Length: 91
Image (cartoon, rainbow, N blue to C red; front, side, top):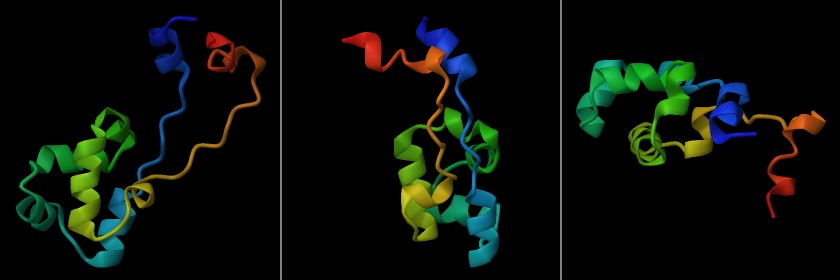
């Protein structure tokens, strides 16, 4: 299985950025100003496009919201699909 196929089949993490921002009363504009990130990038992180964000970007957002990076998205449960054993067979 190619990496492209793996990425296409991979489950996108559910972003919790919108919820964390709402809980803390932080607007997109306020977070953009605090982090020096663009509002477009913050909007992307609030959707399933969070998977396109670099880890460095997520760290900046997390710091701006005063939370851990892991608090920005729901954990993905491991798949029991035998076709997804590519990681184990790559030795």
